[in-house]
Length: 106
Image (cartoon, rainbow, N blue to C red; front, side):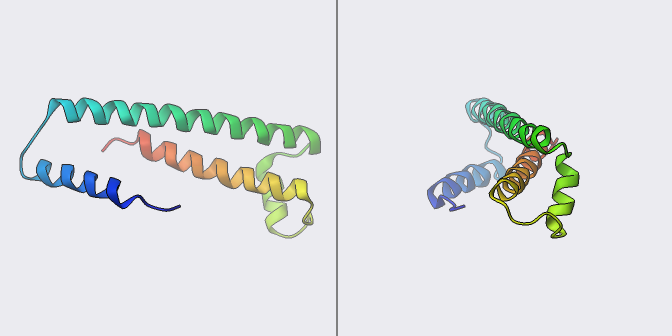
């Protein structure tokens, strides 16, 4: 994933002025709102991925975690369905990690 240098520069400038003691209620509210909206978006993505995983679980009568263990061990082959299922599971795990990060207390 490419990083937008302009965005990083803006964040760095805000961090710098805050470290120097500057505070802004507007920036505080904007950041709170931004994090709240990003958490809601990440939750929607996670739910969509869970639904896709459930579809595979129902089709193959196998829990995703067990499927993934077997797939990574090479016991299931490389069918298109299994590759897709594995990708959705990887995406779901990344989404969960991101949500955990967004929800953590700083």
